[in-house]
Image (cartoon, rainbow, N blue to C red; front, side, top):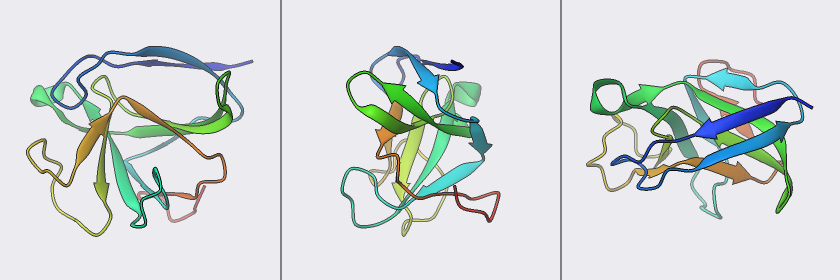
Length: 126
């Protein structure tokens, strides 16, 4: 079965450094950013971008794919760059910024496999 490796360096965006391997259940998709209908029970949709070490921290493409995880069964895995991912409420537009308290960083996310994902550089939902 194909695999995806997630390696995130400790940074101001993500204070821990996980290394994980997941078995993929389909094609890995890439987008500049994605809009996710529901992250961790939030009622407001959220925008997610990858976060890289370029220029001390900057947006990069995001990847997402359904994976198997021994603890969760099937999940939708969302990952970004070497500094993880950056998340903000969809109703808070503006530049990505580590100083913005409405935004937060994570290494990656495992979401319900039925989560609706809309790539923002492609009008067709996942």
